[in-house]
Amino acid sequence: MQANLVKEEISREKGRDCLAMGGLDPCTIVIFGASGDLTARKLIPALYHMFLSGSLPEPVSVVGCARTMFSSDDFRSLMHQACASHGKADMAGWPEFAALLFYRQVAYDSEKSFRELAAYLDELDRQRGTRGNLVFDLALPPTLYPVVAEMLGRAGLAAQHSDNRGWSRIVVEKPFGRDLDSSRELDRVLHEHFQEEQIFRIDHYLAKETVQNILMFRFANTIFEPIWNRGFIDCVGIMAAEKLGVENRAGYYEQAGVIRDMFQNHMLQLLSLIAMEPPSHFESEQVRDEKVKLFCSIRPFSRGQGEVVLGQYGPGLLDGQEVMGYRQEPGVGARSLIPTFALMHFYVENWRWQGVPFCLVSGKRLAGKQTRIIIQFKEVPHSIFRDVLGEEVVPNRLVLGIYPEEGISLTFQTKNPGARVCLRPMTMDFRYDTGSVLDAYEKVLLDCILGDHLLFWRQDSIEQTWKILTPILNECEQCQGRAQQLHLYPAGSWGPEAARAQVDRIRDRKEVRNAP
Ligand code: BG6
Image (cartoon, rainbow, N blue to C red; front, side, top):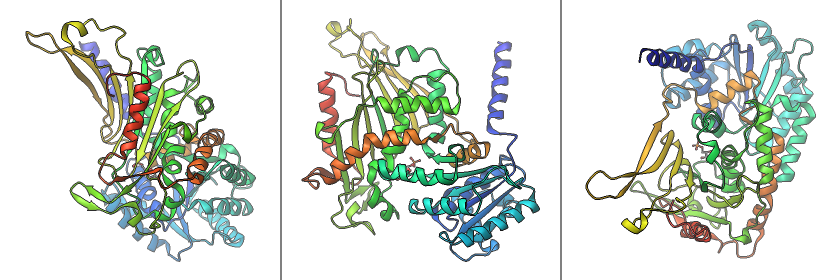
């Protein structure tokens, strides 16, 4: 007993250690797009929280850059408002944090402006002792990625370890192109000035605690891996349902739609973590090698094979409030055919997963925000209870909850207490305590400063996922009867009827008797 308590204490201590990260190189973090939404909503609140928790390097400077004419003080007070309203609002530490913030106006397409920026950063670096290390975070519309990457290169800011320079890293967010060709073109431009090791392609899903936990769960336990295959698993569901609509992002979303917005990145990353083979070391290149192998094993499919259902939200009731349909949202065309919902079945062609459907569903303005992965196991091969009780034995199910419940639950059959013999499904729940840990943006910024690529996309995986999705996108966007094939669903529902019917069809095909 005593020994167990001591062990628990040690693991609690270790847990505390996991929150902090020492040995970070001093650096300057340059945020392009500093007057925009992402900076105010995510990046500065993340940096401020890191500052409060002592997880920023020392020394560090944060330089906001945008076209808008601001002084550093203007920028500080805007960011103060943003953190007070969006951030984890203990503002007592703000004055000290504000002293690390600076602002510099730039013209994104002007080499002269970037050369001036380079001189400014050199001077700031000398004053603050950040050893020439630079992170460039592009919180910008993707059309500006190539422009800014080019200007950074021309101004000598992509160069590493020469003159007074330390390392130089560039951070880009999805979308990584809008199809295979454009993703290759973006990569070509980035690589004109930056080496692959300098490029960090963010997917904020990968930095979520529960998503990171998937590999620990699979490969730090012995009991799951032997049954993690077609012999025991009937199907896998990956769901990212959102209550939010398109918000103020119509300009972007009208070009993207749900497949580019959610599937090419977050949804396929979740699939890869569930389905990949174990790497021999938990190290970024090995993990990313396994992911790309998995993407290469996904069976190409076409819309005609009935694997894809697309939908768009119409007006409806959400939490008792009337909400408008997608086509009525500001900035959206009255006849827009952009899907806000998709359901797709993927199959992985290898020995482990042959024949197991992976059903990926994501949509906006659905009845609830739920992100989870459901591993549905097979039925018992023969039920000794069926004749006696006339009851079906509900198969086991493992749910990896990402939102709102962060945790893992396993459902299994037990005997219902009492004289009559009957079965009762019980759920064993593990709740993840994420009270004080880093949020996704904090984690990616930290890993970028550390130079650790594990939670970032590598270009070969991006290309492979576009290889799978580009033909489907072309088919969906160029097909006859495109309007008829887009199923409208009322906001506040769980998506179009056709999606349910598609799930049933796959289930019937597999003769699965019990609903997942
Ligand atoms: C973003 C998408 O990448 O992810 C958004 O562009 C979406 O459209 C968001 O709402 C969902 O992220 P989360 O973390 O809220 O599930």
